[in-house]
Length: 76
Image (cartoon, rainbow, N blue to C red; front, side):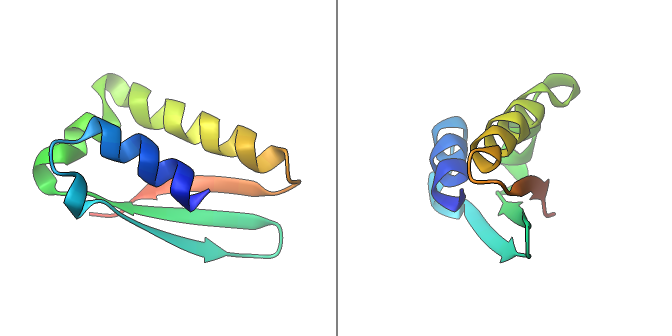
């Protein structure tokens, strides 16, 4: 999951070197903490949150295939 989010977000931002994804594992759930530079945060969120919603949908679909739950959180 971590690699998936990293790959998607690095393609969206202007500063791909500042992208950090931290994976916090639970029993059946995973939280992916995403950090990007301040100037790129708007690009990851998108208008009305559409891009981050799409990223969350992709990640939750990939997690469902392995009987887990995953969420993506943007850390400021």
